[in-house]
Length: 447
Image (cartoon, rainbow, N blue to C red):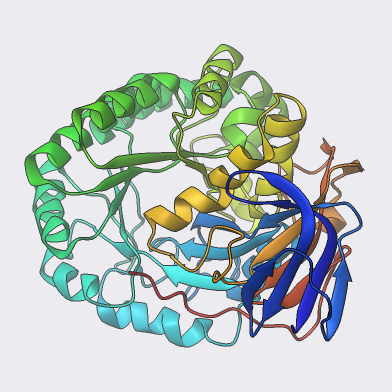
């Protein structure tokens, strides 16, 4: 063996056991007593999880690397126990809407990542003619917006109307590609926002009221109807309401191939806190009232939400200035996706460690075709993290690895901590510090 991991509580697909893990050439080759290895890592009673998989991050490279970038973004993921990510096609300039733009990302990413990486292609208002070629390239899945997005920049991302959505879905269904959907109804949210602006309202409450739950449900229902018509497999990103989850559950029972994610901020923050948190916690969809947060928790604990992502969407701090309609919308949070959710779901609400591993690793790996990842199983990649569930710490700004080190989670006390992250058998994060020079990330091959 190259590495023996001993002394840990290993979170397997069906149980947690105290045993060893043997690793050879970056692969898990034994789960059980390992007699000898070149190197032994003592987990000291900590939980050993399969590496986290964050299927929703925005690293903004190329074009807006002052916001983040592959290097700092992947370092933050490594510090948080995430060993693989899929990066969204928007916020970068140019957006990933054709094969040439994808190649720019592939070339830039080769030497910058501390963890494994892959990319989405975009379905926008203007790239239907290039969609099929992009589907045949190194993209895991596709992403589209049903709410208004983009800017005046000609290479920025744009949303789709219903006609483009259906046309794109037909192409992706034929190519066997999953479509991830930002579900807020553009007509409703645009109208409500304009009404608030005309009335001179631009505070937290006005912003929340401009993007109501019914806008999310309306968009979910439209997308489900389009999937029913076209046969396209779909996935809803960052769903924030139990009412939308209910619509998705009905579609699953109908036999539509649909999954759904949500994000830590919809479980740990509420609309009532937004005045205090300010624009650091502005996101789309917005934070919901506490009574809605509790309903979303009930959905998660019933198993109605397939997995958790960060929706890490950073920018420079100056873009967070202004009112709730002019400030950039996005939460910086990928470094704390795992520890915050473990604390809230397992420590405080009794979710099992196995169920938690499903949420952060196993289920997204299966859905996204990452067949060598997602579980601690013989033959899988040795992508792992250790979690000390016997410590507490208060997150400080200096703990953050982001290029712009701010986050609404700063100041939060978290009753667990990621201590080790291992990518393909190589330690990239150890006891609060990145292992310098370890750019172990590789492009993930999916099928």
